[in-house]
Amino acid sequence: MMGKKIIFINPPTMDSAYRELRRFAFIVAPMGMAYIASYLESKNITVDIIDCDALGLDIAATTQILKKEKPKYVGLMAMTATMEIAKEMIQEVRRYIPETVIILGGVHGTALPKRTLEEIPQLDVVVMGEGEHTTYELIKTMASDAKLEELLKVKGICFRYDGKIYENQRRPYISDLDSLPFPARHLLPMDVYEGSGWFRWILGFVKPFTSIFTSRGCPFNCNFCAAHIMCGRKVRYRSVDQVMEEIDYLKETYNIKILTFQDDTFTLNKERAIIICRELIKRDYKLFMTCGTRVDLVDEELLGYMKKAGFEWIFFGVESGNQEILKRCNKNTSLDQIKRAFYLTNKAGIGTHAGMILGHIGETKETAMETIRFLLELMPDYAALPTMIPFPGSKAWDYCLENDIPLPQKWNDFGMVNSIPIAVNPGLNSKTLLKLRDKAILQYYANPKRLWKLFSDKRYNKKLLLHDHIYNSYALILRKIRQTQKLMER
Image: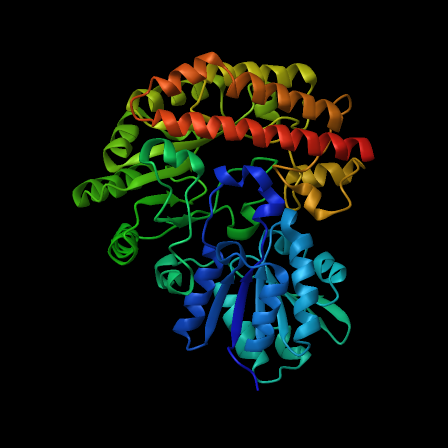
């Protein structure tokens, strides 16, 4: 006797990805799954979601739940760095529920659908790209004991049939985002999700928290990014009315206090962003909000509206402090634009979060040092300092394959926090990249100028600032020890 039609699993990845540094990571609801779940519910398909990290479940505990529920379909999502964990979960699901159909979605499977099915014999189907329409059509087709001819008509899937793998035509992106119901947050433990640790510095708390998408797609062409393979390069917007209706719902239903806009580039359409800010100002929800955007897509007027609306942090993808590297990675921004964006954001009273990458294609030790010096010149409130990862689906991945650059054999070595850096340039091996990243971290986080900026800022709680910086130092030391051991074992 089969139970629920489909159960989605968000595998337990936080400890593997962040370890001691998870205190500063978001615990974000799996919005992709929640969107697909709500769409399936609108088609009268019974759905559930198990978010393992949020619920504190490991693989063994999760498979025991699935064994009891006996769903006809099990769906998972995974990124490249979490594929090893997803594989282990899939193997356990197959072991305990041999008759279930196992479906995988996400950016990794979308980039490498056939390879993913080859590497995981227990996996039945990969859903490529946006999953709402594809997953529904797949379930509807399989419900009638579909033969190969019917499955070949389902756009957006790569599947196994009688031991052979078939990759179908990709499905067009969903043009009318307003046609999708709100994500199925009622299937999630909404009281568990948390904003990043630095939200404590202003608020003293990190929840109630959730995220929202107001658009899909990214028109830019950065060579290190693979986001476009999921939602395309043409940006599709939800109507402002529907966005505000969802925010109203989040405030009324969950009393959300912290809200992150997960759009690839929230301020891409300046006028639309201002309209959303005006609507937020009218409502006066006193939400604490954050978003990500580019340095060439903010100005004084827009930032003024954002501050009044409740935006307290903006993540900027700075990427490099060397103009030639910025050009080579197709960022198409200038150092002057970066400096002006940070100046205007600081002037508006909004916190700045800079994303800087070391080890870009074409990077040298000298250009990496320029990036470190530029970071110290910008002196953002917070900084992410990963090394470049050639993710499947990105132009950097293609570059490595075309130039026979060795890549890690295990997918979990494509992580951004605890993995050994991947060297793609002569003269910048993993050991050198680690040293450069350690130098950047030390010179930035322990910089007297930064510490004075933070501890003299009236917005920030000094006790929490001190506590988090001490803990962060401890976590980074542990990471350094662990990564040094990994290098020695090579």
